[in-house]
Amino acid sequence: MRTKVSIIGAGTAGLIAGRELAAKGISTSIYDQKKELGVPVRASGIISINGLRMSGISYHNAVTNTLRGARIHAGSRVMKISAREPVAKVLDRKKLADICAFEAEHEGAKVVKGRRVTEGDIKKLHKNSIIIGADGAVSTVARHFGMGNMGRYVLTYKAEFNLDIADPESVDLFFDNKAFPGLFAWLCPNAKDILEVGVGIDSTGGNSKKALERFLAVKEVREVVGDAKMIDNGASIIPLQMRRKIVDPERRVLLVGDAAGQVKSTTGGGIVYGSAAAIMAANAISDNISDGKSLLRYQEMFIKKYGRDLKLHRYINSFYSALEKNRIGSMIGVMNFLGMDSFISKYGDMDHPSLLIKRFFTRRAG
Ligand SMILES: Cc1cc2nc3c(=O)[nH]c(=O)nc-3n(C[C@H](O)[C@H](O)[C@H](O)COP(=O)(O)OP(=O)(O)OC[C@H]3O[C@@H](n4cnc5c(N)ncnc54)[C@H](O)[C@@H]3O)c2cc1C
Image 1 (cartoon, rainbow, N blue to C red):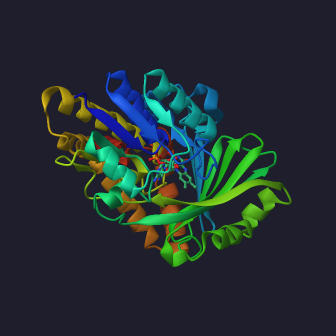
Image 2: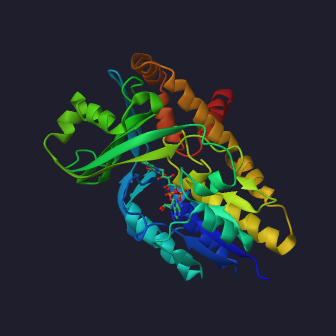
């Protein structure tokens, strides 16, 4: 009998896995509880240009803005990072979902919308198919197959405002471990006239909506937002740590994207690593079907390529999460003094902090 694959979740990770599997001629169905994919939009869409290339998504029609820099605020200090070339795109998440769904269907995958998959459904689907859990941070697939808990996560709340943005090429990140413990608060120009204001906090930070209100009361933010009209808002969750087990080779179950916790814990960005994982999972499944190779290769390949960077993201996040705002501010002062702002502007890589460190030591050695 021909092997089938059932993917639970039609976010970017599930749809990319579906696209890749179908392109290899593997019978693939993708199920999502949403009738309209990508809606409501509860996440931002900043994605590195390199990451977008790797994902294979024809993303151009979803681009709403282009970014080349960031301002990092802590206490009274600010570090400005500005690359010569654009480094990231901001994408409309609804359009991105539609493009990914179109590409998966175009390759022959079946996308079933408006179908919430229960643990009972998973049991039935599992009888005659390989299962991919691409069902986000609160994964039913991970729970059903006992693939461990999500170690760390942050709660988010974001809102969009209609206003003219002075510098639409830079994001602002505000570090304050008292007000926004676990991650940070941000201002992101989603388009030249749409500013996203958001916060990410861990469980010690209380209610995420209240944290957003705290952020909106910060002087710099109040000055920018003024009495602009809020056009959208909502809460979500970001996993900050990969599950220990992302594949069960015997039972033929794989997790990709947020379900696996494949997210950069410094920024909460998950699309690049989730897309890479989806492609690797599809390759591992294809090799398993054609040559009987173990599905464990998926986890091995992912750790080999991204394990070190994921760890570094986690270390950096744990490091600054333990510091008070003024200590982070002093650190920024020292880094500015040492010229780290220009160094990061020149050599920084959003997805791979290990590259920055490597370049730093190579430069020193040379
Ligand atoms: C506020 C915020 C800002 C972010 N900003 C960025 C950013 O700028 N850049 C970036 O790269 N990443 C960002 N992220 C993270 C990014 O959104 C996620 O990493 C990414 O969406 C994960 O994709 P995914 O396909 O794994 O999961 P999801 O996008 O969560 O998709 C999972 C899908 O599974 C479906 N589903 C769940 N359970 C079931 C079920 N039982 N049956 C059927 N369907 C089910 C859901 O409806 C959903 O469509 C942000 C996240 C948040 C919350």
